[in-house]
Image (cartoon, rainbow, N blue to C red; front, side):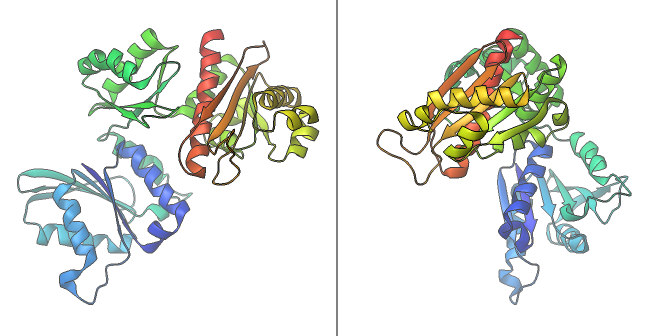
Length: 373
């Protein structure tokens, strides 16, 4: 069981840092089974100290416990572990980076091996020493990430049945994520990263046009485009630039993405992308006809080889009987004329709908790309 323990109100209350902590933990551990927040080490009543209670829980149930805290509290954590938890054997694993930033501890508690990772997350970024890279290497020697299997025209249950025997051969565990939606995904986990990679190779050889395995979807889109010296652009409405943002987060984006358009208002759709006023009035902005013109306009503007477009109602307002909240049109078009435009009905709050639409846009790209390139 992998547990993320965050100490400090900023981890709980400051959303960007909270999300950064979760991304960091998932990158290195693959899965985080539980998160624990503790505001401070201080308490008027030591018996009811929330910090101690929370830490005891983490130590009892976690195989890997990642503690994110200011480095001046590290000794408090280590002392508590060694003194209070009846440790039979304890060692600190040497790491070739500053000890005040990162410590890995391994100890035996009641005949069970536990690993505690102490990290001052907000102080790992220094220009003098590449501490983050050192941490990456050290974590990846011990922890396997999660691989995701994105489905292209096949439902999750069928995919799981098809892959079950192969997964067992490689000792890979498959689970269905986001079931009962337009965006079902499978997760693949293993204690051995190489087993996951070998499993992925079999999928790529046998089911590539139906199941796409990757640790990072946006990075895989970039890698495919780089390999063929192609470029992509975006024309977004309901996703507000999220499709472009996820691409530009990854290495190599500048080689395949020159820019995109966030055409939120109808007037911008008309003036920038040359979407016809007639289609906007007759069909509405959330329609197949408008998304098709957004795709064509984006290709004209950018000179790219592919265009992705989104238009929909992310909510919580704006829905109607004909087009309820969650109604999204997503399209892909290439310069050769290949085109797919699909209507989806997504569930969730505004941000979740936007995120699902972004992922689905990449999957439409994969459908066109894998069949034609």
